[in-house]
Image (cartoon, rainbow, N blue to C red):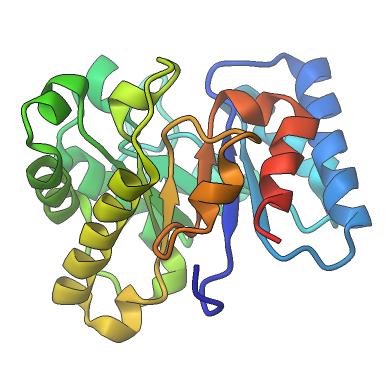
Length: 254
C-alpha cells in the first residue's frame, strides 16, 4: 500500500462480549498499541452498542479508536431500538460501520439506506466505513465487478475529505466459510474500487481513501493481503476477538 495511506486495522466485534470480556479485550489491545510507541498503522475497535462507553474508557489515551457497528439515518426521533450517529459520537466513537453484509442481508438494507446512514454519520462528525461486496451466487455468476460497482455508486455519499470515508470490500462468500479469493482477485476488486472512486471524486481524494479487505483476514494471510497495492488495511471479524491475533494482523503492516 502507498505510504500516503496509513493502514487501518479495524475490529468488528459484532454481537459478542459482555462487560468483563469487552474490558479485558479492549485493555489488551490498548496496552499493545501503547507499548508499540509508534506503530505503523491505525487501530480501531467496534464493539456492540452496550460496550462502547466502557471500551472508550479502556482505550483512552492509547491511540486506539472506537467505532459503532451501525447508526440510524436520522439524528433523533421515534426509532425504538436504534442509535443515532450523534449518540455514538457522544460516547467517544470516531468511526461507524454502515452497510455491513449482515445488515444488508438480515435487515434488508439497500444501497440508498446505506448512503443515508453514511450521510448521517458524516453530518455528526464521524468517519464512516462503507461496506460493499458480492454474495457467493453473484461471484459464481461472474457478476462480482458489476455488483461492487453498483453498490459503491449507490452507497457512497458526496465526499470532500478522504479521511472521512473508508471503503471495506467484504466478499460475503468468504466470511467464515473457509473459501477465500486469491490475492489477484482481491487486488482486482480493490483496484476497481479505486478507479470508481477516482472517476467520481477525482484522483486527489480517491488516492487518499483507504480500502479495507473484509473477507476473513487473519494472521496467516494478513501479510500477503496487506502487501497488495490497493489494500489499505482490514475489517476484521473473528480474529479481532483475540488480542494476540488482532495485534498480529496489525504487525503484518510493518
